[in-house]
Image (cartoon, rainbow, N blue to C red; front, side, top):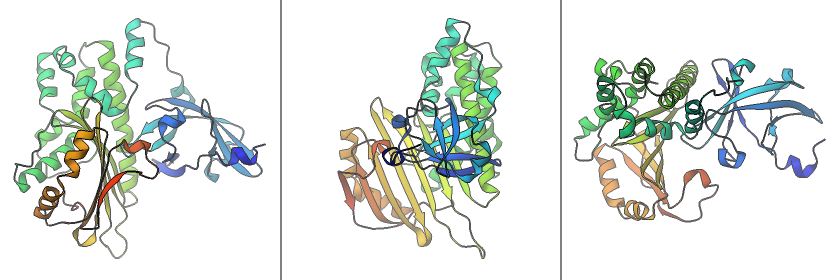
Length: 355
């Protein structure tokens, strides 16, 4: 039986539905605190204590409060695949028991590949886009990977920036935008990963490609399931300005009659080693916008803090009003309540849904 002190330590995940499968989303604590990593398969035991359902994950001290959807599994074990989202949440998606028992590595190369698959999808993409990795590919494929990235610059016109943003979404391989030319789809990450698996490259590179393809497939499933409920929730991985970029786009149902629902965009990239950047952009009706930004590099933090006037001017060029802007000199996934922030009183609006 769980005592009061242990009950206070329980994690309260949010049930979500992916292709009809009851999955769990954990916003706090983060994956580091739980000891979970991306793509990991973890075993959970469903139990009942004083009428309350719990899931006890192997290697995780805190039990999870389980929704009633899992009551039929009481007393049974379930395997979950861990998926980390750009906004710092952890998704636990049930998988068949067979998928939870991978064949043990039989060679040193296979062991190395398994080790190198640890980390976020952005980290794995960075490994694939490493110059040494690209040089090891056949010339035609190396050229395709080298040309997969996009450049986005404030010096570009607004129209060009919007077109480039649409192309970025397509190259992530999760969203289908019919107005974007087919060339962008041919350069989409899933297409290149499939081609990579067809060549005789090293085992470590193939394992990275397989891992990313599985992750993109899961993201497509989640996006499709959300669209069936008139909701947009898409996680996109792409290569922008020479670095991996994680985007999460969220929009609630439009309602009946149709309205103007709020959009939320979560963004992550890494400028350099130990220089991570997270953005949370919110766009509300009447073109009102708010931005929160997290920087681990104090130099970049200072530059962002001191560039408020330029940011407001650039946002205004898109016809938006910036209501709120705050920057934090720390990693986003370590935050509960930000302790040190530079905030500007409410000023404006969010990203236009056309972007």
